[in-house]
Length: 120
Length: 120
DNA sequence: CGAACGCATTGATGGATATCAATAGCTTGT
DNA sequence: ACAAGCTATTGATATCCATCAATGCGTTCG
Image 1: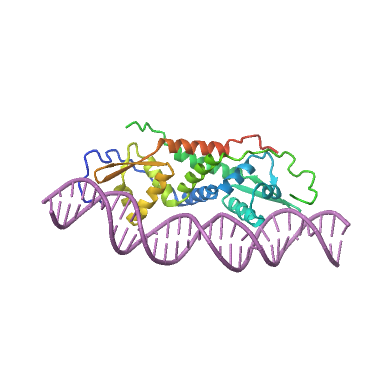
Image 2: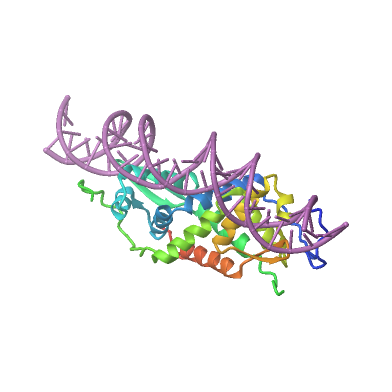
């Protein structure tokens, strides 16, 4: 708590912002953290850009990283709920998870959506 | 490059996804990373929820963290271009940076824009 | 001026994470 | 069955980061 008396125009219109429910907050942070890495960001864009899925080997080809590193990042995207994997024999197909994509839209929309006339 | 012959239905509709320009990619990662922390996410929500700005002391009151930690997070949000600070005497007023919220929208578009009928 | 105060920076520390080499678990072709 | 190949896991390492205590820098009040 401040001890000095504030200037007259300090925080005249304070708006209370309720914190996110902890579950929603944690899920949002998880999704954001999953994408807050250049490799995973491009990975997700590549996967989400495919009408169908694509197999992990194509992802490995696409990045200049060792295969275990790719697998590590794919796991991170999976655990964030952004992509799903379906295995067929030795091949692993990755695809964007609609639920994760929707959560992402909601998170970012909720942040940028505060479009009140900020005038002044 | 894979050595095995793939199953017939593997990646039949591969869509080429151009990587983001490095500048756009780095800026996106910076913004996502800034928000990929529970404290900073709530901080940004609080700041962006104010019609005008609010002073740093109110932010310190709001979180159960030491003052230097708050200052550290505010600096991160600043450097990501998400918030601006304007000082008046000893008081620091933080407000959402419109350019940052616009960048958020662009990131969102770059991620979700590939909205082709995913229906198989 | 000098003390008190708001905010930022520095230094230190424990925990997370990105990366690769080595390896393991399955599956397929021979 | 056996070898080869695709993917995931483990272990090790270097780096990054969140946090706090201590301190510094302006500013304001008395």
